[in-house]
Image (cartoon, rainbow, N blue to C red; front, side, top):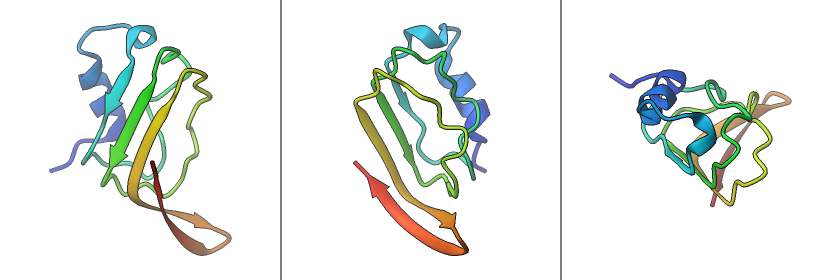
Length: 88
């Protein structure tokens, strides 16, 4: 059973403050949109989300230090079209 994205982010924090996290690897969790990620992750440089079933980037915050994003395979529904994408 896959864990929800928001809960997975809390598990990855391991008691640390979000401002100190530089990398989040969140593969194989469940999410149709981005939940649990906020602009509090101001030091985040790497974000990886693979096989989550993502259908929307809604909720993805502005993260000015973010350098690497890997999101695949997920699909976004836009104007009733399903768009499959990979971001590296």
